[in-house]
Image 1 (cartoon, rainbow, N blue to C red):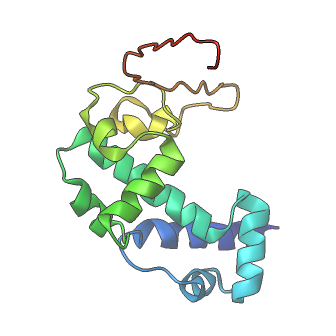
Image 2 (cartoon, one colour):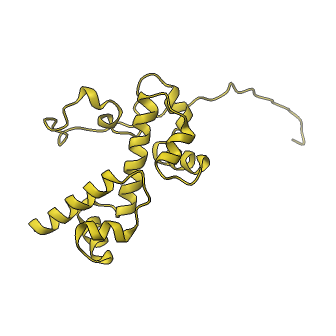
Image 3 (tube, rainbow, N blue to C red):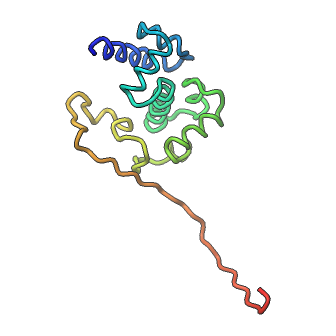
Length: 158
């Protein structure tokens, strides 16, 4: 059991240090010292997601942190985190967080999107001492809808 936990720790550390590069299944499995199949199976069993889902999540979370706290271009963030294009990054970001990156970067304070608070403002939290086991996540969504007009046409054959 300890060996498996150490392997997962090595995989996550490898992923964190190489987020700005292309990461293959072979790279992750080499970091663990397992075969590709076994590394992926063990990782999914322990983390609840495949290594590539974890990589995508971490890239999106770190890009959200950059967009929130620094004035960076969306294209620069997309390229830095190995997305193929601006539109691909925007689609992935919007699918994950239900808000597009431009709108997200323009809001001055977090509004409670699907991004855990600990990733939005890391300076105010001491992650080693925080106990998140009894916390609850509340998802809110800002919806901006244009004013609606009603056109009512009455007739016998309508």
